[in-house]
Image (tube, rainbow, N blue to C red; front, side, top):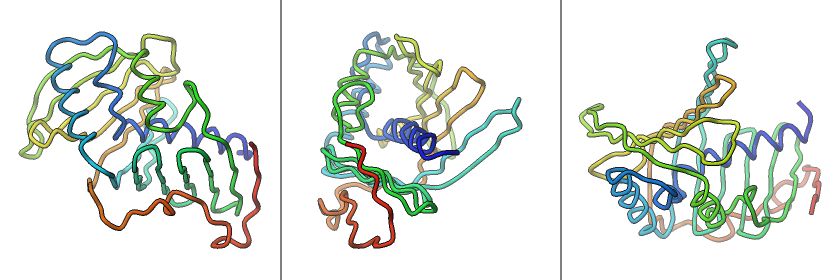
Length: 223
């Protein structure tokens, strides 16, 4: 896999992970009454936090290709700033600049945060998804003594995936997991292991890649 392919893969990871915390779903274009209430509750609860930290498990499954992969990661979000750590792949964003750090390659790629569908700030994603999804309530079910609400988002415009399934904790009004169903038969699953909010020791400097801390890293400025 070359550098460009790795960067595109990180972009895809980022879009999926932000589904955990970006509250675009409450503004989906067409909603049934039940899904509207559920998603508005999720949005209001999420917007009440000054910051969020999520530990998650990422899984990729494709039975026909005999693929079953799993990895763990962490995402921290404060407004339009965020940091994603998936071990060998890390992303820093201060709201204006995006650093994609490939640990094994000892390389960091720098991009500007841009407007539009490919933007990576939570705020811009929110604006984009308000136009691109319909939502439907599917059912409630019990899972590990938790009442889980199942909501499906379907893209209005053409995408490489057919739908996104959200599992939401009814009582806490928090996302439990997000599954993207790719048209190639793959499923991308993000399961939340731990959810924290309003953390005191999260600083703006946490969202900036500091080259002084990585003296051997090659810097590729793509702005």
